[in-house]
Image (cartoon, rainbow, N blue to C red; front, side, top):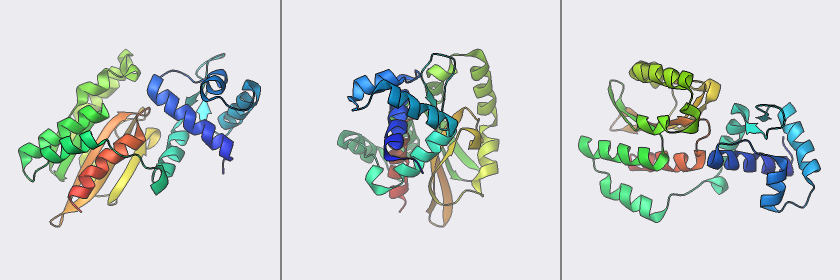
Length: 230
């Protein structure tokens, strides 16, 4: 179990990295959040978080980045009621106006959620009926500026239907996240998804993005879909 201060530091590092895509330093945390401790104290606690596998330093003298373990811990906290993030009223209104029980409306809803999440969205209405959109959103993320990441992503796109077919039956109902090494789409990605029942048939709705995705926002978006089939 992490101490309250370590948990705060880890959550703050994650939130900063999600916003900036740059390593987070102890000095920045102390200055920006007006912490009542010295940068040296924060640096020591960050070193302990690194030893425990929650953050890592990409190179000497750089700040720290969250690991898959950090995002897993953050996700579990998000699932508690008090930590959940809500969509803005304007966003809910847009989605409510779009959503209707027909294929064209489903596709438009998926496109809009892809834009709101700045990620890719897939929607398996049942095991062999798949729609996906928003893949271009992934290629503008900083993580995909390297050629090898683009090649890896292109291979995943080619196998998207096969991957979803493989995981469909084994997923439990409800909201869940597949983060980094546990993500079948690629260990440099994360997926927030929900499996639901509609008239006795299972559906699967998911948002794919870099590990540096906004998990709270994406959880709220998939919950919108889940609630429509509740």
